[in-house]
Length: 178
Image 1 (cartoon, helix red, strand yellow):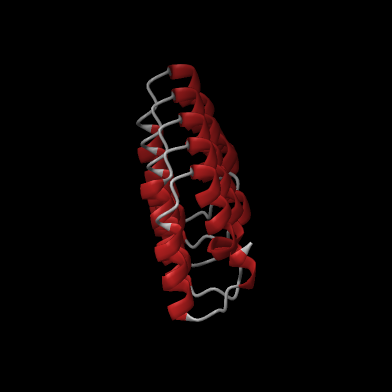
Image 2 (tube, rainbow, N blue to C red):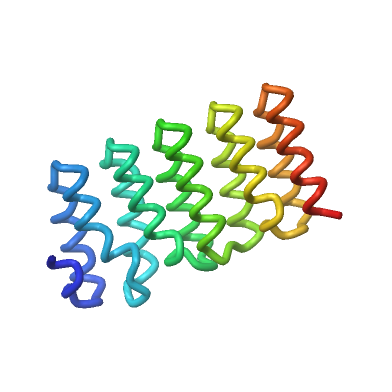
């Protein structure tokens, strides 16, 4: 696998991404992008471009979710990478897979308040009330007690129409901030 042996230079990363963009199989593209989005030595700019490429080119929700989950620890505290990650997650049409990708980001990255807001804004595009409430319930205790983050949570909460799911997610926020 070439990605594991790729030199850590900007030119090599650009050439590798240009080559990866020509791959027609979602599975093969995921395997090609995986080393870029997981290695700590790859520049954030190259990781962001790889996430953007995945979000625009991978049509398989499973392959995109899997790649994003692998990339979540690499996002770390980078708002730039969180932006690219949440944008790519937004291209997932399956509510379950989108929830899983965003849950991985919440669990495995060291998100800043700005990145938490991006994650919660991305959650608003989950149309399944169950999946949206499950994500919110999962992240409520993890997110910082920051006014802007809590407001973003409440905005995501407002997109849930089912009363049971909305109350469940609202209760998680209340319990987390006691």
